Image (tube, rainbow, N blue to C red; front, side, top):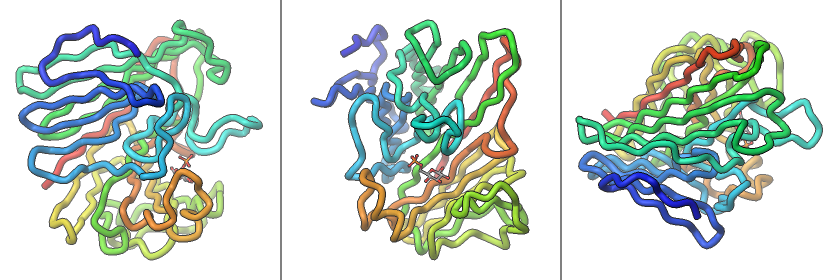
Length: 295
Ligand code: BG6
């Protein structure tokens, strides 16, 4: 297990028997758990509240395997790869990141920074030299920032997402607001076109949902009457929002997802997907940010 080089109150590092490393963060505002596997936050609990994030009871919790829940960092592609045998949603979520920084801010919030850099080891699927930083600010809100730098000499196009799994009281009874009037790709049929789909009013979930909304640069909210809470999702650097719930049939074919778990979660993803992929110019940071809060 790596050693924590930073002596920050409320920040500890431990490992599961599988070797999966978990950073635990506790301060007066909230507690959080972040795995170095994929720079993947798996829990964010504001003081006195339920967890905002959801993780499947059947998730892998092993280095090198994707975690089903929390916030997978999808990079440098979103969805499936056109290369045979390459993993869905990129390789960054499968890699062990380095803990680059941990600090208490003047506000009392805690900042943790994880880093993945092409100089650390071989990344056969990257195709170009890169540096990624994933910055978490755990406070009365949860801020997540992915900073991507192309260290090569040519521009490269990447897709990515902060693929957030939200815990909800019952996905069948919530509403996702903020997408009214926005067109979407229906990813259930793997279409490359909008096919005329436009969101009307709030999104309600009553079947499998796998939509990529574009252009969707604004905030969304998950209105959850069962738990009497509204989760607000603000973002920048993203004009695509993905909403996903696998519903009944798809739940049964995913080995790392419980057959009966689909009512417990909804993914609302801050993405650079489809026509919202980004061109990384050499040396110029590209930044994707999301902020979660309760209201
Ligand atoms: C969503 C995609 O972002 O992630 C879905 O839109 C996909 O199509 C889902 O099924 C889960 O992906 P994965 O690779 O983590 O199983």
